[in-house]
Image (cartoon, rainbow, N blue to C red; front, side, top):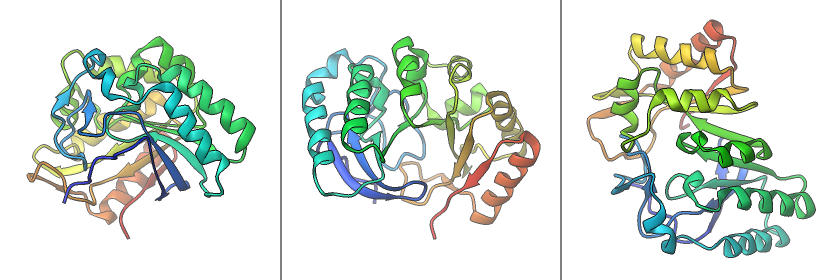
Length: 256
């Protein structure tokens, strides 16, 4: 069964395999996913509104003041969480007020929960915009997607809306410091785990030099039944090989 859409601004805290208890912040509409990608493996299902144009959907998104108030209330509560994560029903950086929101959440964190981290789970599409580039350095854990090393595989796996190109994303990511890369590998049709695909992807990792790479495969139902998971032992081998070949720290994560 696919994951249900998040119904409000906040969700969790949920247990993160990487960082502990995460308080999720959903900036997208509650009724369905709003994202410029339609990834074959997305656990939220098919992206019916696959777009970069947010103007038609602003009325469905939470207001900046409401998001800030919800996060402030959570920070003042006794609920324990290790990080506040921008994630949810689509791509967080598409939120029109994302840049001022990051500044407000950082201010609240510094005042109320200085021990908590701020994280971003992003598909990297928004990194092409100057205002997003300016605030990503304010985020403790910017985790950016890169699932492919070639434009062909990028289009087959991530199925972006018109106007999004892998080379533009690569250039934007190359301007950022101290980012993490998150990659989902799948077998089947389409696949991004063939030897040639992996060589191309490793070349991109070597070019970007991220702090680390988080490597995953699918562990929940997905909308495309023609893809399958990369087994944990092979995922671990790919992680080790990538570290050897690029010098970048790579961690493989899988369901236990």
